[in-house]
Length: 239
Image (cartoon, rainbow, N blue to C red; front, top):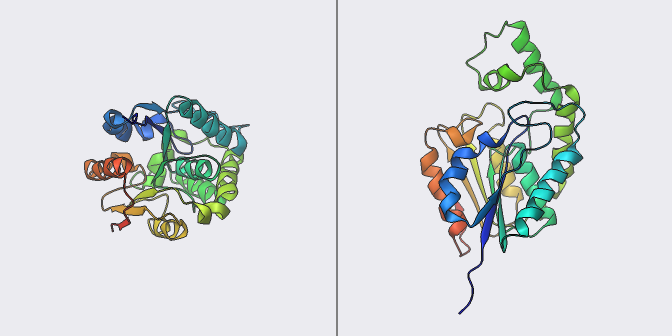
């Protein structure tokens, strides 16, 4: 009798974020896999200290985390949120990845100048723009995200974006239509570039950038579960 393959999930959080960004989905999927790995990228977490860290530090941590998990299981699925989605794509370019789940992938993120411009406006308005998701996201981090870190974030994107067209790993993209950080239409562009036979695109009507906390998260959590457990090649595009 053929032995069952063991499966693990590597979760990668976003720029200036932490494990909490993917925690709801991780909790939902925990019974469907044999093992998991959820690293905190250097300089990230509940207390930010991004100064001095480079793209290579984040790429290396993603790779080391993959290797640790790959030693414990037969197959590795990578789930990445925002910049973590870019890191997930980078791993799929270099290592055997069973499946990819990209949550609000920031492959065409606003450029560093725009990021700093938004933060400057936030400061000049006396913290009054609290209805905009961009400012909600950075309100408690203002002053903790140096320009150098934003530039390194864009280097992660620059090192990965040219090779997206080579991705053959089965991929599911989940994007919120109310995302104030990454325009939702960029998910369609990414979907079109990936050449995997099995690729799926799901738009959350109520989802903002922190997609794991969307009002309809239970609906697409179930779809992600179906995707990672699907043994067949099914091409599905949900809009």
